[in-house]
Length: 297
Image (cartoon, rainbow, N blue to C red; front, side):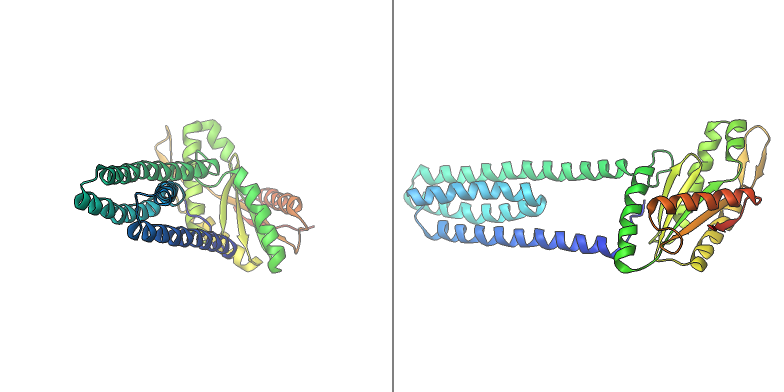
């Protein structure tokens, strides 16, 4: 499923990345200072032990916050930090320094385990987030995401003083086909329709399953001519599909009806926009199906 490429979304992601980058730089500088103090100082002192303990905590936090990137920092620290204990251990034959080296190694292994779990949790979270906004049958955005995204796009249109179009799309005579040939055949029609809508609309458009055999497409910053062009292309592509009907060994074409309205030119709010687009869709059905209708008072 293609995610919507919008300017505000990019701005949010850029700010998030910048925040993470700043945190990473601060942690890196902090670790660098501690490494210098440890490397050139006396480890076998109270301040040295305290700093070493702080380092252990910080290097465990790095992979917890930054995942594998943080683990790489911990690895570099471990390589640098382990040389000093070995240097003193070999020169002085003191087992204390060898114990520190073992501690640093164990600390790195713990950091590696944390990093692996953090990255695994990130992947799981992404999967769960995707599933929560995806329709299980058609694999496009679901009704819940539609409601959320329509609120966001209306707010964005108000801020930018631009228009927003909502299209409602319905498969003509779907109930008859679904009842006559079974839900398996009906589900196949829905899947193909959703895939076609996703592939023929623009990257900036948001395609969702509204419910039943009805789909919704949000078209930001669009006018009547653009909508007609996109929807005509969709209708033609859908009509060119051939569906194999069970038990009759023939293929047939199906058609789509489309109704749409425009915010704020026709609709003043979200509820009006949905109601008007639905009314335009029913008008398209009433006038013979396989048509595109703009809402009219």
